[in-house]
Structures are given as structure tokens and as C-alpha cells.
Length: 86
Image (cartoon, rainbow, N blue to C red; front, side, top):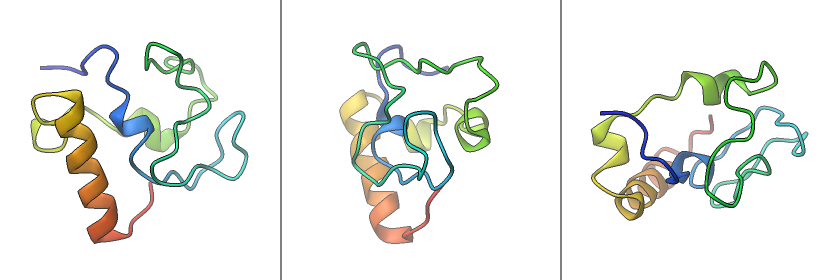
């Protein structure tokens, strides 16, 4: 499987501590990335300005579940329990 088109959960749920164009201080958990478009697609996909943490994130059913809603729930839970930022 691969990323679900229009999901964007990994661009919303986790904290991203590295700089992102439009978000020089990164982004807090639960906040939409400034580079997520209205269709929940990354505007920086394939762009060298895309943060390495985003580039290295890959679809994994254990994290992404079977739906966008499930992915948001899983990622929010991981964020809450690990307190780890990307």
C-alpha cells in the first residue's frame, strides 16, 4: 500500500520541530502544516525544501490505519504518549 491521496494526517497530528517553509519554527501537534493544500496534499512533495523528517515518513499500516480518521487517531495517540517531535 501507499499513502492515501488526500489524507494529510501526518501533516497535522505530529509535532514537527524542524523549519518548514511558511513555518520557520516548525509546527505544533494538531496544527495543519502551512504546506498542506486544500486537498490535503503536500505542496513541497518532491521539493528540496521539504523537511527531511517529512521526506523520510513512509506509509505504514500500523501508523496510518485503514482511513484518514484512524490515521489521525493513531498519530495523535502516539504524539500524546511519546511526547516526541519529528
